[in-house]
Amino acid sequence: MKKKDRIHSIYEKAPKLAKTGDYVDWRNIEFKLRCEGLIEAKEFLEKEGFREELNDLCNKARSKEEIQNRESFNLWLINFIESNRENIYTNFPKVKIYVNQSHKYFSMFAEKKGYEISKMFCSKKLIGDVIFEEENGKKIKSFNSYQSSKNFDDFTIKDLEDLAKNISN
Image (cartoon, rainbow, N blue to C red):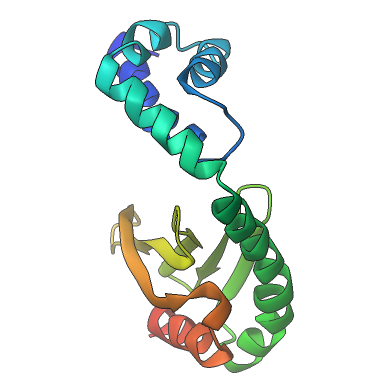
């Protein structure tokens, strides 16, 4: 990997790691990134503004409320998404749903369009990427282009069916 790509990867991965709640501060994130071969992590994470941002994200991610939201979302993935999967398959035979509990999101795909949806950081809203395939077979991902208007625990089977209907058309 070129240095430019490693630096880009540092700036992309560091906030994501901070939001997991698994890291106390920027130093823990730096260690993780350096273990992944991103040797420039020390240099770039020592920048004052970036360090403060990562520490703030780590603190928010480790807050009692955010921990409860993550735990609730994980249960919701099992209790709501998993239990309504067959209903979606019956009513929308081209739609498939995949729950990734380790990365805490679910995917819903039809032939050439789909979603990857997760819990928004420090919120109970859902946010997701829309993925679609162009005529030439190239896949395009539109980041954070889906956002729910309601909390995940207020989501109904109708909301799930609306998502399925949107990608199956």
